[in-house]
Image 1 (cartoon, rainbow, N blue to C red):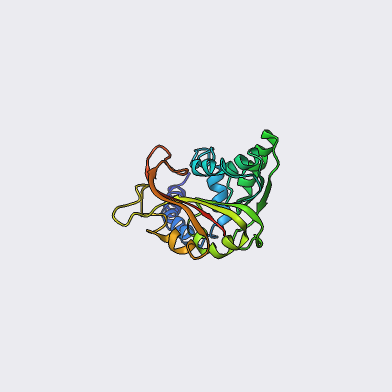
Image 2 (tube, helix red, strand yellow):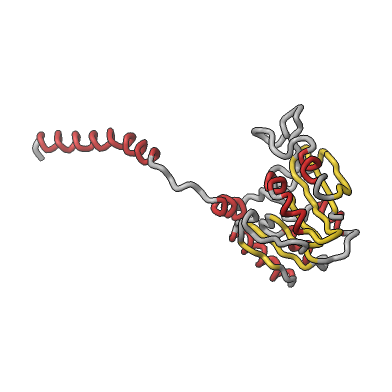
Length: 229
């Protein structure tokens, strides 16, 4: 091999190496397709680590013990933990969630438990929940959607139907103790939203174990049971 060949070869390699950081930066700078809500929740529900409790919400389980089973709607059913518990308790349940992967898991569990559920892939903001349709509506850990959809949820309840809500509580005097920015409902947000629409049967702000994230850490939660009529 001639020296000129060696020189040219080394120069080519060095030029290529010098180009790599710029190419990487250019690729990183290219706009990426934003993840849809369905993509985001599919990622959550298919992760190997457990970020949501596999068990039904304790507040919901307590409430339904005193209710006669009827038609129930689970808003944001996820992997179906509450939907399945209601079905196993004798309720006719429809669960709605934007995550098709979460609903696939719920349907598989329903088959395993030999119970019937109606699991629908849909965004609750566009799903027709009807009027005077439901004896029970569940909105556990649905965040601002419960408040923004309050009028629709109240209208969808039958007379004497009940709404069950649990979520993080945003304590204005301290962080929500779940890491990062404070999350959850501001003080009295549920009361101010639903008092004109439903009769508040039970409302409590507690420090308890959440259904999401670190379930071994007590955090501020808010719970509400409200009835139509």
